[in-house]
Image (tube, rainbow, N blue to C red; front, side):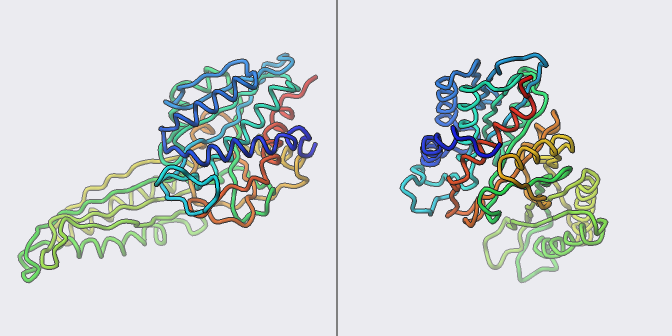
Length: 387
């Protein structure tokens, strides 16, 4: 079935919800207004149960179908949080909060799942239970993990879980997905090297941390290029450099590197962490200093279960007539934590020719709302058909 007529009728209303959320962005777990709005809407729709405070500010709605003969439970997830970016779109509904912006489309994701929830609450044309999940803190706060850690999956009996993300550059309303790894694990590293500070005119009396930094930045580029199988995916990027001195004539006592590591397999992730630590220690020791490495595991690899990917693809084809093979990308997504607990799939939907994600001129394309809503509805009715 293509885009549902009822969702086309609701397009303007759902767009208004999206723009209201866009104008009032909230970061990480501080999604108090958005969470309250979501909970209010779910109650208005007639959801059988609305629970707040899961994963701190997450919201879950329960919608029971007309029957429950098979005991099936399907979860649909949306993210609610914004980014610490100053908006530059000039839209009438632009952010009213300086330094905060929905630059990734989470306002659209939330609105689409709300639209699906309204439709499902009205029709109940499925056999089982639909769980609509609205999470905070996708952007670096691991809000999906927080909701899972609060026992969400077991509490609501979720058996499969699905999510969607818009993608600028993919034609408007086109779907894409791939089985297996789709997005990368995203880790962080922080390396502090310590030497012996001194006068810049007397380098022989010091242990120069700036030289260590220079050598270390170059050496870290070999961790992937000379240790990883060339057919495997891995990225190591140094993104921040600083020293303990701001003076032109002082050799700093300490210096610091920060960066990110992106991988598509656990073996690659383990190897890069090990080699990064070894290289940092070796370079520092070569110059008479020492290195302290802090390696923080972020989101794991987003892995779509093969069977659930087929279901998601078939639902996309039913809605739009097609579904492309999504490329492997090195971006991360904390929906991966939910996929570690339950089989499911992560669909992408074309946002058209817009500014890129996390750009101050990005805006979600409201034209894709009925398409996205219809896919979520199709997933529920396809996985839990009425006998």
